[in-house]
Length: 59
Image (cartoon, rainbow, N blue to C red):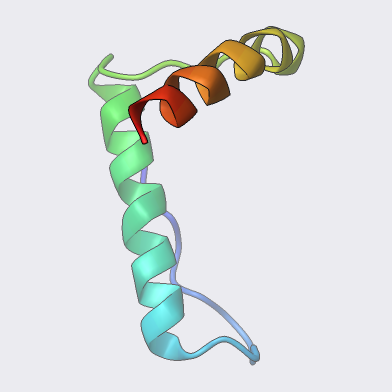
């Protein structure tokens, strides 16, 4: 799955849009290759405090 080229005018620069397009394409490539998965919003909210604590512990 590929993100389509941008259409119309935008306040973002074309370089910013290209970077975003590449990130979206990489995310879908990982998903298509079964190297990534989506997580439900409520599950993510429950795990966020532990995730933040681990990040803060390492810095």
